[in-house]
Length: 201
Image (tube, rainbow, N blue to C red; front, side, top):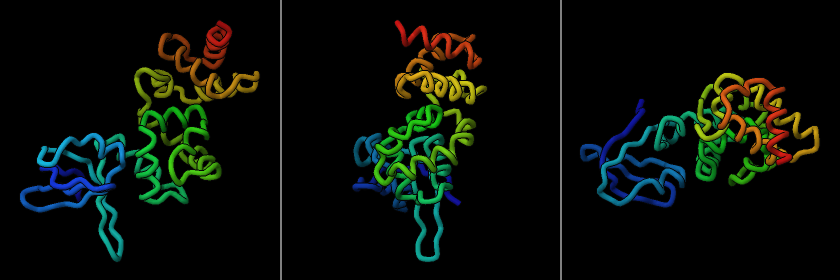
C-alpha cells in the first residue's frame, strides 16, 4: 500500500504527474488545484497518495496534504461519486470550501464543481455533513471555532436566520464573522442574536 511519495517531478500532464522516486516513475492523478501547486519539472515534491486497485488497473491519486486526501476518501463513499468526480470536486473547491458548504448546507457552492448537479449536491450534504465535522477542515478564519465542538449550533443558527427571511449565504457570512470574533457565542441563541445585529448593521 502506497501512502506517500517523495521524489522529483518528472512530467506534468493535464490531470496527472509522473514522480521519479529512485529511478522509478509513478503516474499519479491529481486535482487541478494540486497540479497548480507544483512549480517546474525537476523540483522535489511530496504527495500523499490514495491507491485504487481494480481488476484491470491500479491508479494512484495524489494530494498536497492529508486533509485533501481525507476529503477524497469521504467523497468517494457517496453513491454517484467516483474517483474522477471526487478529483474534479477537489479541483474546484478547497477543503475549507467543502467544509463551509457542509456547515451552511450550501448546495449552490457544491454545484460549482463539474459533475455535481442539484440531486448529487443534496446527497453529498445528507451523507457527509455529520462525518465532515470530524475532519476539522474549516479554516481558522471561518467558523472552525464552533464547528469543532458544536457543528449543530452553527447549522441551527444559519437555519434560524434563513427561516427569518435572510438568504443562506448572508446568514452563513454573518455566523462565520461572529464565530471568528467571539469566543463566547457557542449557543444557537447567542449566535442568532449576534448575527441579527451584524445583518442589521
